[in-house]
Length: 415
Image 1 (tube, rainbow, N blue to C red):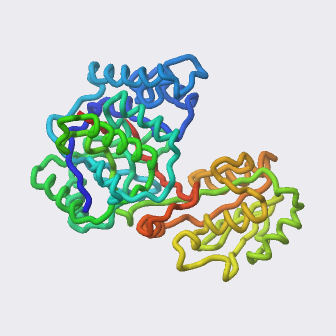
Image 2 (image 1 turned 60 degrees about the vertical axis):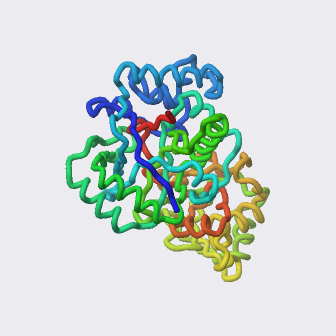
Image 3 (image 1 turned 60 degrees about the horizontal axis):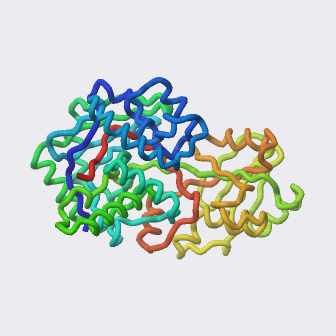
């Protein structure tokens, strides 16, 4: 069963939150962070993207950059831009996108739950990215940014959340880049704190929705600290890391689409003929066409949109991976026809999150940058949970969660 605990969050005073908060470190590059931070010395980018404090072109992996992160984290606390709460408590974090709101509980997730599989994964992680985040956690001795979990719907927690959101939030703002609303409430009543702990304690599993590398890094640093401490008791703060946990039914997963530079030597007609062996191919004309159901794909090629419907026998409904559209398209189109074997490393393919819309796919093909685009029907949260429960791993570039968690609303110290 899942173990969580309240913690003394480090966070900006209400009047400074919009100065401090930022997008996550991994959704923008160094120059974008430099531009967004501008002359705002309170921007969290000075901690999560501290290369912006050096000359342009400085590697984000430079040893000086990690040291700068720690220096800036101390500075933010010394100046009162980040202040630690006096009491261990939970928090409610709400995000509103397109008039839909999802409510997350900010908790200290248990390192051992990650290591023993109570916290379930659905993606592979890369060691180099893990090590980068581990260095960041080590040097700051803190989880600066949260990870994004899902939990099975829970009526008791739903009632508790509704009780708090009927009151005025601690934070309430519209983020300048994504345009989404972000709100935060504090759960400081002892009985309610115990209820949150108890209800999570009844859950057999939690599921990583987004932030696999941050989860791995946080857990590995926690385990590392436990091993290094001769007086380790298991109650130390480093045994936990910060997660925002949302009810699974509330989460929005967008399509994660593909654009490809060439047709592997095939003409347009040859490519369409090859597709017709495994798909029902229909020309939908020049107006943007969006796939409306599982196993239906949208192809944009030479100014025309096509629907591709996978034929019976091309996928296995009993296989939680084989039934995924991301797997069907990877096997039957990208691999078999276009010769793209590794989605992580092949330079002929790129990926476009669904928030950008299918117009972005059209633009990149019409510009001549790409030859064709492929739009997929979004993966469901139930599919992700089924895959995690089966112990299998999703193909790469399968999910795009939106909205992203804002960073800088709460930080968790490991001491």
